Length: 339
Image (cartoon, rainbow, N blue to C red; front, top):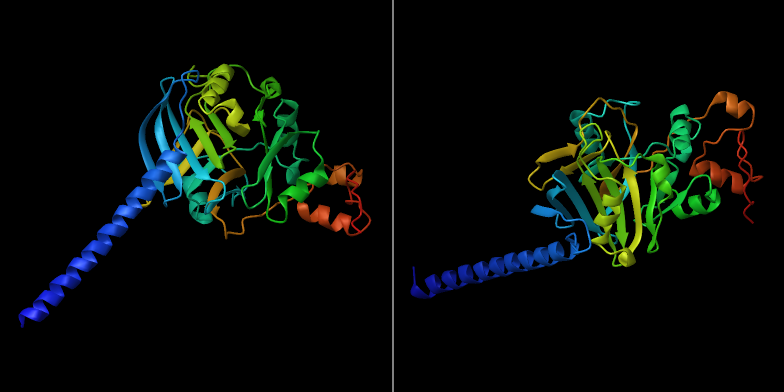
């Protein structure tokens, strides 16, 4: 082989190496930048916590693992306008046991990067006796959003249903839980009536004005006297700063608290308070934006429908009503007819 050809080959190899090295450097640079931006902030006035591990999932979602008040803590952080959106799913089986195996099955079925158990009721199943019982116990908060991470919250029954469905759109979702912690920088403690002020596991949704969404999940249970009480929750949020928070909402607080995550290498992890046997129907999960995730399952009480007092309603019911006579048959819902 001529020296000229050998030099040409060596030069090509050097160029390929330089390009690969440059791409690797850029990947590391942007990953480190995103990790820094998405990392949970700390503040001297906030509740102290320790982060032991950080992992960027699919170059989009930061998973932080650590501990707080001597219990495990996981934090998922992602950009509101990024490639992943928060959606609500229903279990394939009706009310299955909340086991690690069941959660992994649902996550795989949804192609979810993460899954968070939450929600005790929703508008499509308001007639359920369980839903009414949880509302009577004080779990009157409602978190709802569209399929683009535009998420807000209200308190039942003081919710304008028409505005809610307009906000949600055809691929939106709603889930009823404990309630609003902070909204538009203002602290709200009305949710506390539905939860004993004891150490417990917690799942918290937080969105800040800089476009970052976080799901914070902590281990614990009141039977173990471990976890965060009400004051701890607010002190934890002080790390972010109340003035930086657009919305903070308590999704769960007890034995049903779970969080599933899937690493880029395929390793799956389910964290949570596995202290007793629980069942579930709904959950929130992270999916890519092009996924059509809406699957409302209306549940109406036949006797309430007969009496015209059903409270269950879906987005499709709302749309049909506003383009007809404004009424949803079997319910007391009455909407303004669209012109």
